[in-house]
Amino acid sequence: MGEHALTVKTVRDGPVCALILNGDLGLSETAGFLGPAALAVDNRIERLVLDLAGVTFLDCAGVRALAMAAGFAPSGCPVIIRSLSPKARRILELLDLDVESIRQASPAPRTTRGTRARQPVSRHLAPPEPGRARGHGR
Image 1 (tube, rainbow, N blue to C red):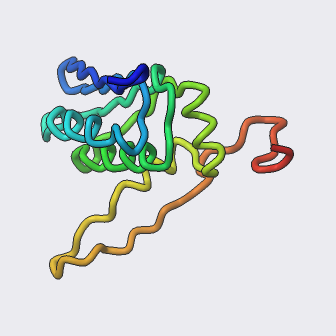
Image 2 (cartoon, one colour):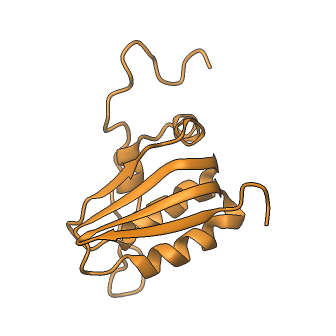
């Protein structure tokens, strides 16, 4: 195991399911996250919390895995991304995404013919931090 190997801890409190991630969430670790996430999320949960305070590395594959995990939640179940680490927040800024975009970017549902239904993905749902222009001067 590497120095920053991913660990996923599942905490259930009634209808709330929290997945607490520690370590790197990159391409090689996505299966180690998605497997436990799929097992933890069921139709009984009413809120899914993804706690990223301990994430030391996040890449595009990790962001996609977060979106997929959000898609595991039952319809109408809020998905809360809590405690973004500075490194995780930085990759979202570089990808020009915000937390709401991740929630909206879960894979589109399949139609009856086996093709993906088109689903709009909204970006920039949250205003940028005051005094900071997005994408300029970096």
